[in-house]
Structures are given as structure tokens and as C-alpha cells.
Image: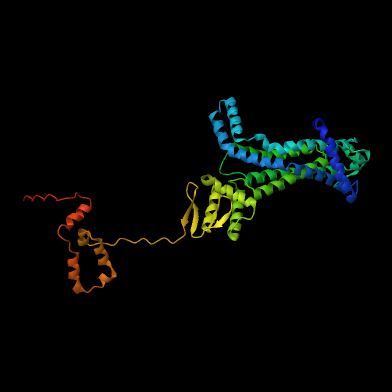
Length: 424
């Protein structure tokens, strides 16, 4: 670890300068030789670094989602060229190039943070050994050696011997208890951060090897932190615990407000958005408009959560527009067809289907539809019995009308050949 830290000695001076500036601020409040002054200086260093890394964090989110989208295509390439590793790598690189995806982008925040981490380790290791590092002079060195966090010296480690701990004016039991608790908190925060990513912000409709890798890392990373944590000074443990808590909170914010499409977090977000939009009849800010716009643009490529959201708006008498706004749809209900395309259906009560009226045999032979209406109408049913013969005369077919009726029903037109008499 000392060799690795020495490789980043070029950044030791900037890191030590930032710590000294924050120490002068907190030292005026809590005292220059207290653990609060030095501990809060390290916490402030983490906050400054993580704020500077927010653009890289955004790229990490985009890269991770792009990799999740490419997983089905990557799986097809692996199955197609499973016996040709070289061709498989070539096709993978071609896929990355066509989609503009970089697999290393998901590791950018960790890689960019590593130099600061090792530089801080180099500074704290110098304090433990009584060496001035960067802008930390002899007076600051003595002040840092006197600083204790919950009774543990800033530069003490879990693996230090009793003599090394006594030289820093502390007890071995206190140092090991404090470092063990901090290592446990560091591992648990890492585990929870990875777990909420897997359980809430992963598209569950696609089962890919990427998900299995992430699930494996959920258990591997905490073990790695626990193993290496026993060799970290207390100040480095404060640094790493702070950055884990920052990552956890930052990820919770992203999952809550900008979840991965198809994930459980997206279902919860769209449910909240639906309640707000149906209550106020509109979207409230640019972010919500951007999400609604992305859902509308997808068309038939919408997932189940997005289709449910669009259908819910339609049932509530609202319609999502292409620009992300939501308007009232009076007299129409927007629905989504099987292919995902939105359609508009008139919101009127459907007309009752009337059964065709049954005709008598004479009416069917005459081919006069009006006769059926007249015969089954209320006026006809109330006709006295004396008028029935007259109605029957009117309903009698005229000569030749039967032939025309039959011709209309599908027989050949024109005069028909008389039937030959049957032979008895």
C-alpha cells in the first residue's frame, strides 16, 4: 500500500493543502488539536472531491444504462461466437463503437477518486511515522498526532501493535473497537448501496449475465473493504465511510427521481407522477416533462409500466403530448393498442344493438321490408281484428314478385324453366 501511495505523491500537496485549509476553519471552532477539527477536515475533503466528480457520476449512470440496454445484443454475440474468442471480441468492440458506449465509463468515479484516496493515505501514513508531508509542517504534524476520533488516533490502524498505539497516546483495545466499527459500517454501506441498485433500479424484464455480475459484486465488494480496511488508518476509514454514505445518498436520489426504465423504481415513480398529474392536470417541471416526452416518443417500444401510465391518463380524461405536456382530452379517451401506438376513442355511450325483427313467410316471399316494419309496429299490433283481412290482402305478393325475391336471394335472373311433372 505504501508503494502504491507513493505513486500518487504528485497530488499529495494539493490534498494536504485542502485539509489544512479546512483544519484552520474547524480548528477555530473546536480547537486545533481535536479529532473534530481533523475529522471534519477529511469529511469536507470528501465532499469537495465528490462535488467535482458529479459530471463523471452522470456519465456513469448513462453508461450503466447503455450497458444494460446492450445486454441482449451482447448475449447473442456470445452465443453466436462462443467458440471464437477473437471474433467475439471484435463484434463486441464493433457494437460499442456503433452505439457509442464505453464499458469503462461506469468505473469513472472510482478511477478518478483513486488518486485522492491514495494521496490521503500517504499523508496520514506520514503523520503516523512522524514525517512532514506536503504543506503539513512540524506544528501541524504534532497537532494531527494528538487528534483522536472516539479515542482512536487519526493515524492508527487495526493491525498496529500495542507499542505503536502507545506511541500515539492511545490504547490498543480502543483503536481496534473503533476501527472494527468503522470497517463494519463501511462494508454495510457498500452492501446497501449495491443492493438498492440491484433490487430497485434494474430492468427486471431482461435477464442478462450483467445482472449476475452485479449481484456477485454486491457480496464481493463488502468483503474486499473488510479485508483491506484493517490496513487503513482511522483517517482513511473516515474518508471511505464518508464517500460510501455520499454514494448511497446520491444513488437514492437518482433512483427516486430518474429511475432505470423497466425497473421497480420506475413503476413507483410513474405511480407518483400519475397521482400528481391527475390531481393538478399538468406536469410541474422540466424533468417530469422530459420523462413524459420520452415515454410518448417510444411508441410501441414502451414497457409495461409506461403503457399503464399512458392508459391511466387516458382513463382520467388526459392525454400526454409529444412535448411532454399533459392536456385534458374532452370527449375522448386515449388508449394504447397492442403495438403500443396511442389511439383516441370517443367517450360516448355505445348505442344499443337492435335485434332484427322477425318476418312472416309471406313477408319474406314478397321481399318488402316495409311490410315487416308495419306488421311489427305498435300501430299494427293495435289494429282491430276486422282490419286484419285488409292487411293480409295488402301483404299478399303480386304475381311474379316471388320470382324476383328468389332472384334477389342468389338465384339466376330471368324466366325459370318449369319443373317437369313428377312421374307416378
